[in-house]
Length: 182
Ligand code: HQG
Image (cartoon, rainbow, N blue to C red; front, side, top):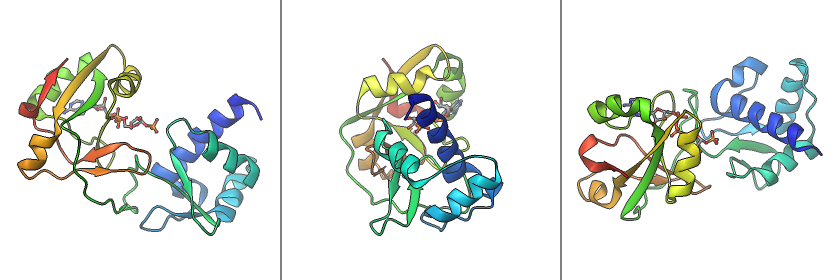
């Protein structure tokens, strides 16, 4: 199976499982689960050939473990990153490490210094434990800058933190005074 096919399919799955399930007539439940057979037939109507083997290969090879398959094998979901309003993933609150990192583009800094980090179209602000991960996230948008977030201090002051199955840390908003530019 080619890397190109796996990458293209991963992007397609991210699109329908996080953002626009209705584009292929798919319904997600409130926890983000989609029936795999409905996903395959919805994709077919969109002219895209998907089958279980390909879906399982994408899930297994995803560098960021973006997707999970239910224990009964019938459903699939994205583990984080949603923008669709129909999904409200339940994350357990968790104690964050002392510091977390967010990679972003230098051109966003003025606005971030004013408003703090906001979720944008997603449901949460995404933070990483590793500077290397934050760097690759930020590079997607241009010249990268890393922000160090005083996560433990935030939690002590009442902000909530969650961790998705794939290790990504989530919170609702990071006010500017909890972050420094590295
Ligand atoms: C920026 C990837 C202006 C923020 C990654 C970011 C991640 C502001 C962009 C996941 C701002 C949003 C999420 C403000 C934040 N003013 N810009 N006040 N506050 N921003 O893609 O964190 O490959 O929605 O810095 O691994 O970059 O999709 O969020 O640059 O975990 O699986 O607004 O996406 O995962 O961009 O990335 P995004 P993100 P996947």
